[in-house]
Length: 89
Image 1 (tube, rainbow, N blue to C red):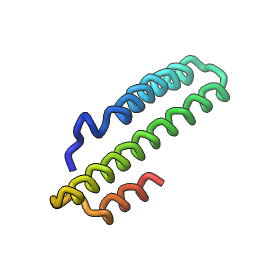
Image 2 (cartoon, rainbow, N blue to C red):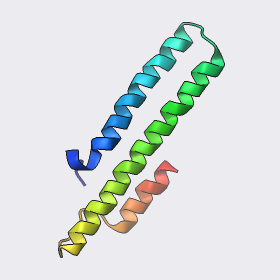
Image 3 (cartoon, one colour):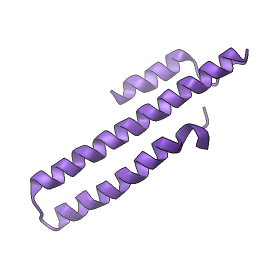
């Protein structure tokens, strides 16, 4: 399934935010800052990336369900989407 802007808007926003947070973590490590602060930010980056993945899968599920409702063949099966979902967990 191809990623479309209407499917990935929120996920893309989360990923861009995570990129900024990751850059901050790298700077904290390079600058020898407190490990607690760096790890807190790293946990936030990890959570943002995970949520972006879940958002993309949820959008894909909605997209495929809408295709089925219109009588069309969805781009991915439920099994393929489930496999992708489980790969994130």
